[in-house]
Amino acid sequence: MTPADLARQNAIAFECKKDGLRQTQAGTWKVTFTVLDMDERLTKAFPGTRYQAVLVEIDDSEMPVSPKEKIATPQPAEPDRHSAGAKRDWRDVPPTEQAGIHCNDAVFIAFLKEHRTYDWNEARDAAECVRMICGIESRKLLNTDHRARMIWHGLDSQFQAWKIGERIGA
Image (cartoon, rainbow, N blue to C red):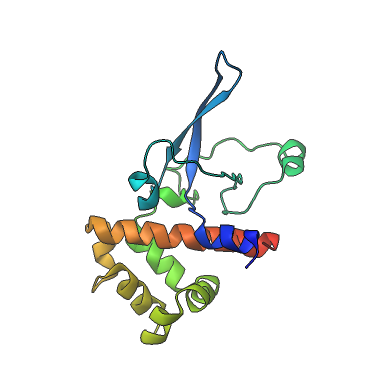
């Protein structure tokens, strides 16, 4: 197993938003992020635990943004999220709806077949596989069952990281 394979296997993927950046008197940098779906491995890690961090800026379609594209392409004004037909931020979509969207997505199904082989082989379809993984009888519970919702967010984060890895050939 190569170091890259080991890193991919043990990666903690989560979506975050940059809140602040400052330089200390010692010349080091402090970056502040708001984590949108905290992974349990981070919450249980001892203070001082060291990590190698890799950040990939993503656009509204969850695709990586290259620095050249960002400079060359003027950023459109923020759309009115309340107007008809405005695209919602994925974080604003309820977990039940997220799961419904993913369960009808061939790419998500390929992810489940590749990374959740045991669960996939026990299930009849993607919806049943997600219910098994999250330990629920109905995807509706993703909106009310905290434990199931955290498992769902973890699965979704793994899927997003897998999609990025597939697109950039990682």
